[in-house]
Every structure is written in structure tokens, then in C-alpha cells.
Image 1 (cartoon, rainbow, N blue to C red):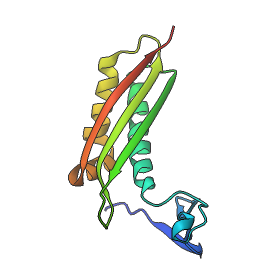
Image 2: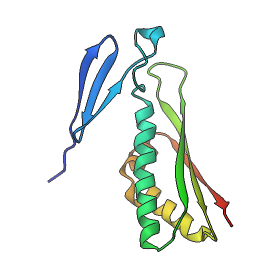
Image 3: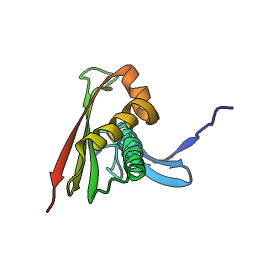
Length: 142
């Protein structure tokens, strides 16, 4: 049986909503120019957050199984929106940034590829409807 995820968005006031997922609450709001109070992020950036979080969790989990130790790891996700309504992302670029000593680039690449091609459900959906690209940056420490 398919697993269902349920998210609730409850109107607070003006353009502010409180979204709840897995027992965690987040305020979503709009900028003042459109009636909001800037109390939280806009909805669309959460799409980028979902991708970044999904692939980052995969990559770090895979690297742990490969016994690759990184000192620091971050994912930077940049989305480009269309000019016309409904404005939506048509291109997303992901930068995987690894910091560490003697990091094996082949294993980093393999972990990223496995996430993007096999494990990250967000990536799987997005690839069907937009251009999705990525790159790896490695910062060597002494």
C-alpha cells in the first residue's frame, strides 16, 4: 500500500499560513508588497529546500556506508522561475560542496549520482518537469 504524507496549511492572517508536516510547524508568508508581513519564507523556495534536504540526506548516508569522512558538507540549490504566470521553476542547479582531507572524488561523484538517479524522490519528480543539473565542489584541508 502506498504511503501517504499529509501537510496542513492553516491561515493565520493576511497572507500568513502555518504549515504542519510530521508534527513540525513552519510559518509561510508573502512580502509586504502583496499583503504579507514577511514572517516566513514563500512557498516556492520550499521546493528547493525539499530537493536540497532530500539529496543531502542521501549523499551523507551513502558516504557513511562507503566510509568516506567529510569535515563539512553543504548543498546549494538555485532555481530559475519563468517570467509568466503561473511562475514556476523551469531550471534547477544543485551544487554539492564537500570539505575534507584527501576526499576521493570518485566516491563523492558516485554518492551524488546514486542520490540523483536512484534514491531522491524529489529529484525523480523534478527531473520529469524541468531541467535539473548539478556540480561537485571539493575544498581540500590540510
